[in-house]
Amino acid sequence: MENALLERGRRVRVIENCLNGRRTAWPDPYKPGRNGLEGVEQIIEMHSPLSLVIVMLGTNDFQSMHAHRAWHAAQGVKAIVNPIRRAPVEPGMPIAPIIVVAPPSIENPRGPIAEKFLGGDEKCTGLAEEYQVVADEVGCGFFDAASVTTASKVDGIHLDEGQHGLLGNALARHVVEFYAGNLA
Image (cartoon, rainbow, N blue to C red; front, side):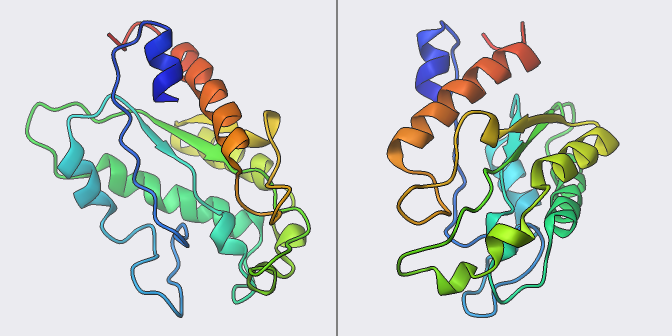
């Protein structure tokens, strides 16, 4: 996304905050620190001022140890929006707008982590629609990653390198449309 925006003449720096296994609002019973709500205010404060925040979480909410469905993941994203907006940034710093991105649906989990995501392909049904509802409710932008890519052909869950490129380019176009005139 950063490269695509730079190629379009936009002066940006994209700061990724990725963590393997992070959920929207629930802990991982085996790996501590995977609840997306934990520390989100400090992350925003640490990197402020920000021009835009993009939230793309939810796939891990469908791991087999959780009974969550699409509605639950969307509520988890909704729960993250408020702490992002109330992060203790310095006085006078703007609160960044937020774009919620619905990850592509899980497709037939396979490979070494298939058991971990058993049933996830069924539980995530309707994810984009639920995320759209939540984004509208809380006044965020919205993008459906499934409009440009699917889940990995290798494991049915993650994005492969080429899919990251497709999503990054599509998000760059979306960001320019969403945030026109505010990127240098």
